[in-house]
Image (cartoon, rainbow, N blue to C red; front, side, top):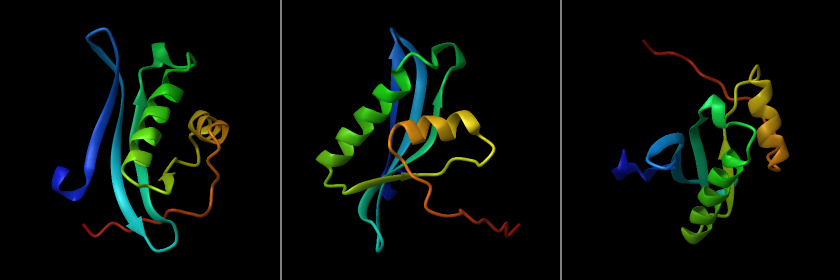
Length: 103
């Protein structure tokens, strides 16, 4: 996936990986060059300590260095904690994400 502008960032407690996020650098006509955070995860015992904010801040700084103009992500509607987290970081819902399975 690296050939397709995909990278990954992790956050550690010593040698222990406690959080991770996929990072897509993409271009879409309505937003321009942007970073899409993908499959963002932080272990439950580490949530609520500001570590997720640190991970996202690092990713956004990396994205700026790559010339990105914006950031996007998907969060499931029923993920109330996730939606609150992203809203607190200044993300706004702008539409629905549709999916159709082909197999």
